[in-house]
Length: 188
Image (cartoon, rainbow, N blue to C red; front, side, top):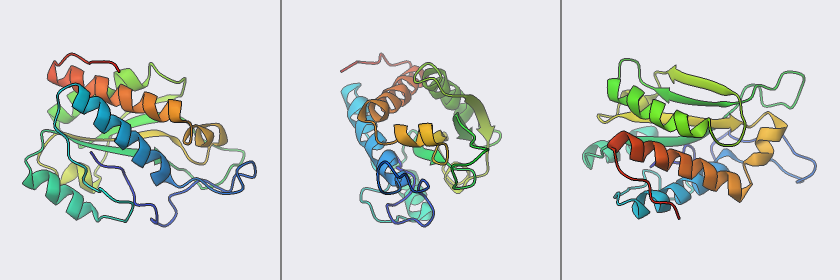
């Protein structure tokens, strides 16, 4: 399980939100979803490992090397998207799941997770996206990277701090992972 970016990664935050008096860092969302996803998966009988167990920035290489060394069955990276770092006249929205081009099992996993993500909180379904991200390209196991909304879309940015939304995203990922392996999902 990979929580996207460290808390100090430059630029990975919402624009300033006056109602909060601050920006929301992407890691505030990613970290919580991975925490809940870890609980969900363990309850369903999976063993998990965190590729970035602290809030510090962990290099992509270190994350991938750890997963490859441990022969992980899957690599799941949780993210929140951004377009132009401004709340303005064009604020894209929605969810997407990224996979490496040509990864048959990556596509199967991405589809399983997206099927559950799109049934949750109403958001635009941006679909599956073939991407050449390092964590998708360099892992030896099926890997996905999910974008669970846009930080520069104010309504979606506000979802980032909602515990109910964080837990929902985690359970939707867990249900997709269970579907991928043909394992029964065990609700809380």
